[in-house]
Length: 375
Image (tube, rainbow, N blue to C red; front, side):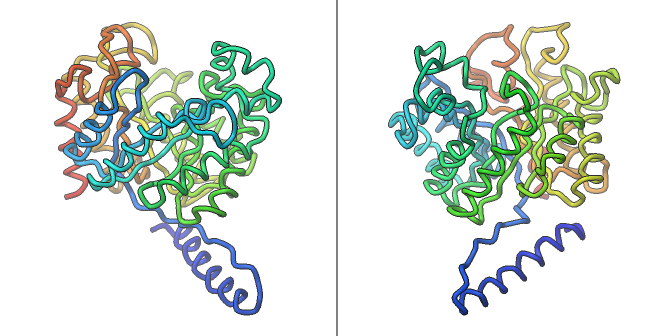
């Protein structure tokens, strides 16, 4: 444990003792957060619209066989709470309940990532954003008018699933307009994080709050987040580490360096050391896709043998103590299974398992890497 993190832990213990004393004198007891979450080796498992519930349940079982101890699950806020605050879609709740229960039985924790704003939270009066399904779809990357709406939803998930959770990650890739498109992305994202933290302090004080979820090592955006006060609100900083179709040792041209595996993570490390030394960092996405796409930067596919080799080497580098890239304490591979058969679509081909259930060579490579870490 670093000196900074040790001080945080000691401060939390001292604070708990002080609050206990105050409680005996009529003072109001306040929750104390868990500030030193355990490391995880995980993989993304998704609830995919149009597929049976058995699909993600089978993925949970495969994740356990992979040697993972956690899964990362994106929860579509707009899908689970589509019409109004507090009214949940039964079918979505049942799917998520089943997935979490299966994970618990398999000995896996769940990192939940709520994302996508429902139309009612953009316009509380239920106006134009809710006029049609297409209009509702268009506003999903817009920040909610009141960050407390997202926070209440996140708190509801935290209460429902309790100690089955490894953490709650606020949104996904807020540095990309395709996921988060406010006029001031950094300011509004930190407002979302702050509101979520306040809610978790109230309902789930021991659940790690994970935030950042940066697409690549976007050091300038991370600097903006810290300028808005991110360091005071989080337990874990998360980042996504990709490398286009290149091997993990090969960099990208300087103007694209923030999007590269090694260069991007080193950029993140530099910002953290200056602004937030000792912060726990998790890589919550890493992967290579096996699509037939070639020649398009950030979408290039690789052969299945290359996917296996690159993931194996990248995980070894991330997990090796004493290396420059050894600072991330948890890593989640993206993703376990291809959602559908679409050979030319990069987004459909990051899986360790093909859409037809065939295991790609990368499945065995990741299993070996996770086993080496445990050893």
